[in-house]
Image 1 (cartoon, rainbow, N blue to C red):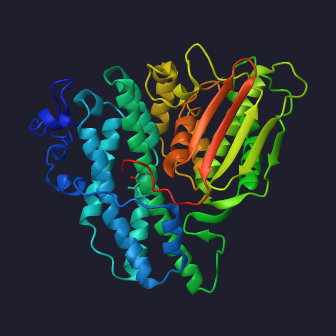
Image 2: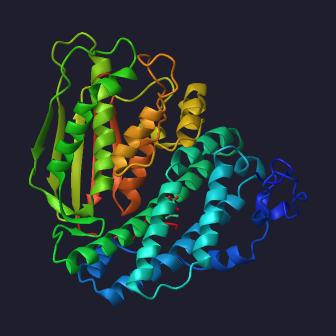
Image 3: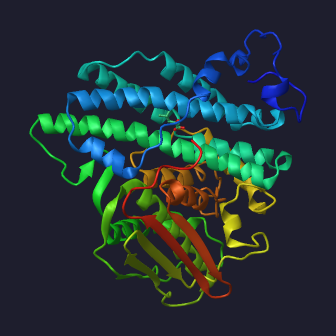
Length: 431
Ligand code: COI
């Protein structure tokens, strides 16, 4: 729990003196002891491109593995320090909201552990470091719903632009840290594999060097179809649950392959297809056969474009005026952000431990599921936590791509996902 201060005050500027610690109450003295933090926050993040991650990892030897370990060990506290400082600059009433306060504590603890972690000099020490990273990754598995809850509760106190740019920095930075940590763990496994005489030729760490886009679409379609009953459960009563699910037609350059992080592409495709399936069922309540969803892949010189078109009626609702407001965490742009049912679902997810799953889409599924766990009537629709689309947007833009939603109100939606195919863009913007 953070010490009290005048609402509206900027935490960093005004709240320098905490109340004395009360017995049994954790008092975040570190909130004010900024010396170590400043040291790290003043350093610049060393941003990387996807291509650099591949080149460095391709010919791994012991020396490079140790260099990679020490890069992660020294880079992550810098990136975390930037975000801690970002949080300290928020009005105090914001950073003390449930959810945000929890994330602040988690980040401070992680920052402290990283800065104290000794230099890694041997493969055995690297193994211990990988375990340390894995534990932190698991401990942080509920950060996104916690942040989302905290920002929804804070939405009345922050202007929409400020709220959204803060959230964007938090999410991009988090993706970047998780990529670096997961990449290093995967490189360490690859190294061991090769020593044992085995190979994973299509990977370098977490990057698939020839990721097949059609296979990703088919994988996500299968995954969604297998869970049709779970997804039906959170639909409005009048939706069509008796017809077969829409067919997904894949056309265009169907053999497109490019180097990318499979989990990121899968996350986005999964989310877009889920939305299309749902919307189509709701829009055509009495159809025997639902209109298909079309996924068109285009392999350009610099970009891979995937367009997903559905006939689910489009995106505009009384609460959402412009499709891009679906990416917003502010209740001014997206009124659903402060709905009680959604806040309750976020609370459940952010305090659950079931979010720890092997793949991103399993995590997403677990999140949706956890939201229903306490529902008295399992057949009742459950509130959606509304994280999938903003997160897809963040994943798409992390290495310089884009996600654009085009609504043809009354008919359907076209979504354009564009991802750079050369891997030469630097990560995020402000890390
Ligand atoms: C996060 O998941 O938010 C992280 O910062 C992970 C990192 C500590 C490995």
